[in-house]
Structures are given as structure tokens and as C-alpha cells.
Length: 227
Length: 219
Image 1 (tube, each protein chain N blue to C red):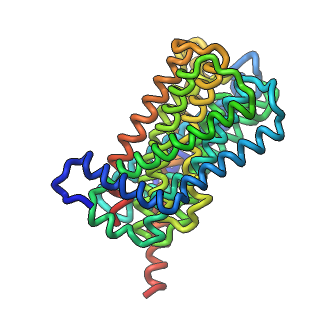
Image 2 (cartoon, rainbow over the protein chains, first blue to last red):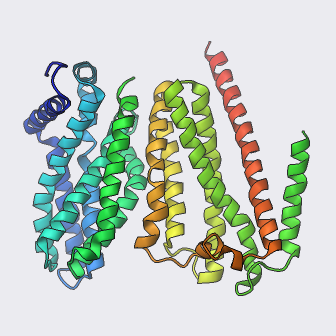
């Protein structure tokens, strides 16, 4: 752990690299999210058949898979601290803002890694045509940022509560609903016509959503983190 | 005491006049009378959420448990009124659009509001320590309230709407509501709001007394 004199970026990066080290030792969260995603994907693809699915159905399926994959493992970053009893040490070693940013970056890298695996497999399984890959990747990245922005503080909340597993999805869904709606709408249009101008409204909404959620989390996180 | 008499006679007058005056909307007919009750319910559901958020902020600033009791009381009544708004809206949807539920943006928003209230109470029951429960619930209430602007401004643009609200409280408001209709509607809105605030006050007092009994028993 760094001393308190290091800058905010330095302190956040220290929390991030600590979490990365812990994750690389066990790979628990990564495996949980990845296998959950692949399993859901296989079930969906197997039951619906290979081709001929409409763009809106494909977009909805893709984001439902991503949502449940995220629900399977994103809480781990805080639950782990509670289970191993390292909360107090981390609370002493770093300030709330640095902890929040470190954990947010950790969840972001986790989801981006997962998306790297799940997205190609999704397109192979469903045989969906994508004309504009760059635009789809842009929506995907904004979606992952939004997912992590909204769920990181919820993960911190549920790590202090009794029943953790079910509560994470219950608390996250109402907040993520708007995001999922925007993402499904944007992805549908990307799969259908693939122009940047066609999804301008959704892109604005996605950026605004992530901005609001991260700002609010930075302001509220200390009330969750400190006893 | 005097205001309770006004409230009682006011609500009685609203109920009587909402049925004996001509129906507020010609095309839908008699069923359109539900709007005298449906809109106040929906308005109170949102008002209660805003109150819960304000008291949650006050709790986080002062750490006084009374603010948490107020936030919880506002939310518990909000849950009741959002349920009433959902049910009355659903009945109205059956009459006008032919099905009880069709994921119109307004239906979606009220459903998400119901889910948020549900999640809020699920969180409260999952935390045993009082102070911890209060601050976690407060953070969640504030965080969840931030989705309201998105539900109001973003969702209707992404999902197509059939809801008549845009013509009732929209720009052409004056054309769709006559003087009698407007009078009954705003009286209903005002009296139901007062009723909510009274219920809110009672729920807070019950909450305080309940906490006192628990404390005395544990001594």
C-alpha cells in the first residue's frame, strides 16, 4: 500500500493493482463471470437455433447475457474483502475515493476481458451480421462503463448486507433498467443500419448515464464504506 | 383538528362530483373518470420517492435515526400509492388500449418505481444493525432516485407511447380540460396529497413508538 502523500491516481492504481494480484491468484470472479456468460449463451443459442433471428431479438439477448454475467461476479470485488476480513486494513490504508476508483477500474477491466471472449462467441453462435464492427464496439464499451458505473456502489452496499447473491441482482436491476433499454435500442440500430447518426440519442443517453452514476457514487461511497 | 374536517368533506366532495359531473373525456366516456384518481396516485408515488430521497440525504448529513424513520415511512406509503397507480392505470389501459399491460413508457416507469421500492425494502430487511441499515438504505434511495430523470426524459424517446398523459399535462392542456373537470382534478390532487402527508405523519409517529418499545424490551 502506498503512503497517503501519493496522488489520487496513484492511490487508486495501488488499490487496483492489489485487486488484480488477488484476482490473478484465484481467478474466481473472472471464471464465474465467463462461465456464466458462456453457459447462458449456449442455452440461448441452442434453444433458439442458429440463424434468422431479428436484430432487436439479437440485441436483447446479447445484453441479457451480459447483464446476468455481470451479476454473477461483479460483486466479488467487495464481497471478497468482507469474507477474508481485509476490510478494516483497506479502510486504514486508503481513502474511500481511491478505493472506489480502484474497484471501479478493476470491474471495468474484468468486464472488458469477458466481453473480448463472449462477443465473438455470440456472433459465431448466432450468425448475426455486423456491418460496422467499430460502432458495435463503441456501444459495447459504453455499455460496460455504464454497467460498472452503476453496479460498483451496489456491490459495496450488498457486501455489508446479509443475503448477498440474490440481493445484488434485485438492487441492480431497477437502476440498470434505463441503461439496458438504451443499449438494446442502440445495438438494434447498429445491427440494422449501422450509422453513427442513427444512434446519436442513445449515445448521449449512455454517456450521461455513466457520468451521473460515477459522480453520484464518488459522493455517496464514503457513507457505505465507513462505518 | 379543523383541517381533518376540511379533508374529510373535501375528499367526499371530490368523490361525489367525480361521478355526478359529465365524463371528462368524450371519446373514452365513463371510464375516463378514473383519471381523477389515477393521476393523484401516480403523483403521490413520485412525491413519496422524492421525500424518501430528501430524508435520506438528511440522514446521511445528521446521522439522526428519526430521519431514517421518516425516509422509511415516506417510502412505505410510496410503495402503496405506486401499487394503486399501477393497478388503476392497468384497468384504464384495458378499457382504452385493449390489454392490461403493454410496456408503454409510463407503465414501464411506474413498474420500475415499484421495483425500486421493493428493492429498497429487500435491502432494509437484509441488514440487522440499525445504523448500518439506515445509511445503506439512504445511499440506495438517493442512488435509485437518480434514474428518475432518465425514466421521465429518455425512456419515452426510445419507446413509443400511447399514454394520454402527454395531452393532459402537455402543451395542449387547456384544450383537453374544461373548468369543472380542472376544478375536480386539482381538488382531488390537493386533498389526496394532504391525505398522504397525514398518513406520512402517522406512520412516522408509529415508527418512533415502535422503536421505543423495542428499546424498552431489550433493556
